[in-house]
Image (cartoon, rainbow, N blue to C red; front, side, top):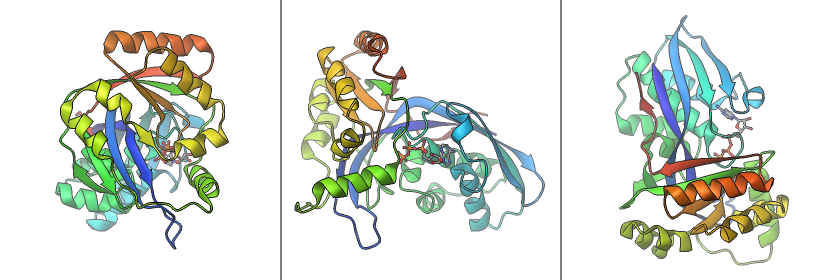
Length: 298
Ligand code: ATP
């Protein structure tokens, strides 16, 4: 079984004050973009769950129970009393620790692939419930498209969104740790009153209109100032996108990937060339969105 599973970006990410358990409530608008990892699931002896990884960042991806795809396979087997094993292979295109939910996307892909391999035939709601136990971004990676996430991001509701958008992604040399970025945000906000997280009504209106110019004006990420504090060089990358006419620019999720909205495909090519030749980023990719979530391709 082969599944293609997309990266996500956050068009808006509002972060509340940490709760007693340390987690931050969020209100976010996710969009799945056409940049995919591939998850293959092949039969294996009873109880065996193994993984091999190739592609982007392969040497840094854990091959044990810390791998989110392995955890997803085990969680599905536990939930549906499956005793069969699985040999997973991941081919990664989504940058590691880039704020693009690569690991979560692999987990969503593994759920879909193992469901098919083992003949579980779980309903969408059942898969969503297993996904929510694996990580905040996993339920969205199953659904894809454009959606609001609340709670820790795992409570997904659909968004009325029109149009397709052209994005340019600029990768930094090293990843940023999501927990460290949240801790930095807490340090920056110490002493400030932090509002309940909410999705901006301007952002929802822009998505309803399908107008990229309106959308570009209301992209927002509360984690951006923390990511910039930890990685000041990202400010120059964001500025460069603005200089080359990006309709909007922001750090994706916890960063350090910077995301730029282009007015159309030609503009996206120009922006990508400008960013690549600047020497400010490790590499640059283009992707359009929204696209569907994790889907079987064979
Ligand atoms: P998010 O935006 O969801 O916080 P991210 O995109 O910044 O995540 P990931 O690429 O998902 O980051 O990886 C974060 C860490 O998760 C990695 O450093 C790695 O150790 C671990 N990890 C576990 N499973 C995977 C996987 N299948 N692919 C990539 N990383 C994984």
